[in-house]
Length: 136
Image 1: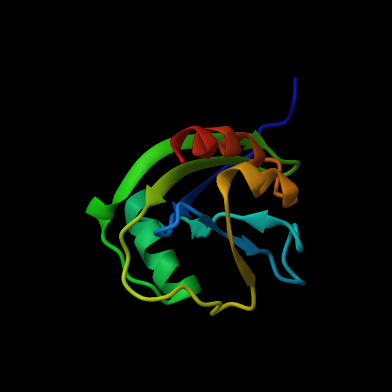
Image 2: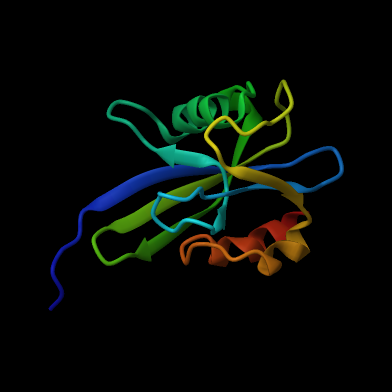
């Protein structure tokens, strides 16, 4: 029997531009999994819904504005890391205001869904790629 790990609820967003590309962010140095590419998002705070988290995180991380009705749930990740179990709903957002820019030191790149496998991603994110390929 394995030791129980706390569940960490994180919400992420596949931000899609007019050309059908998805925005990936590279985790900056000094953070866990530094150098890996991921979908923008973050930890769900107490009393917050996953949709509220995505709206907040997109504004804090990228300086863009969207609303909850603009988020479409696509799939989720459930992955056991060493010290916690990650549960992460992934939303798709095609409607937002502003141009995404790095506000937290992360590199940003617009990528075609089929090219995402060329970017090293955290283990929880990798299984999400086929859903985006099918969608886009």
